[in-house]
Length: 261
Image (cartoon, rainbow, N blue to C red; front, top):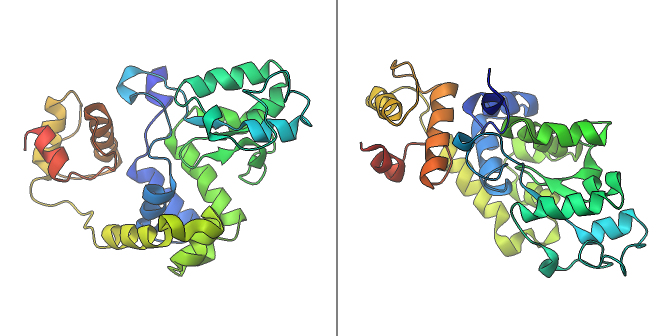
């Protein structure tokens, strides 16, 4: 198995099914949370290009807190007493920032960044099941599925799973996003996403073999059996990522058009 095949792997239906089982909810619940609360993608770049870096944001105000503010004056771009949006660099430059901060204080730097699909803060590594900060950081490089597990553990450890299973979107959104959740309509977005996925029919249907043939023509190697399982869903997501489409694993109008269907 190549390094590319295991590092930076995108989310697939198997990951969703496993998360649903862990939380004792439906896959529609998990897909709704991923769509609304996840950062859109857990990695920078495209899976087809090889191993990728996880998406992160380095938080200067957290680094200041973690280090007692001793770098606020000497390194104001990395350490600041208050949150400042202008300090973000975005994309791969966030990795440059964390490396620079790590040269000052290694562990504090990695505790001060948010990681992966659900942007879990490094200082929350124990909450999501990793006693070791370095183990937590390590799994962020493996796959979106591993990042999803961290998100699921955060939901469970925060007691939000009971609101999720009850479709209590307001309480779930308040617990996950804070008191200002209504400003961004998080509860409404979750309800809408759940309704969409709850009515979706995941079973094989007429035309699924055509989808697999089209994906194979695009460079994939799928069995043309008409079953949209984990491998086909992962191929759909990778194709969508490659084509700059919304990555949701669903062959909607735009994806169909890109596949030539």
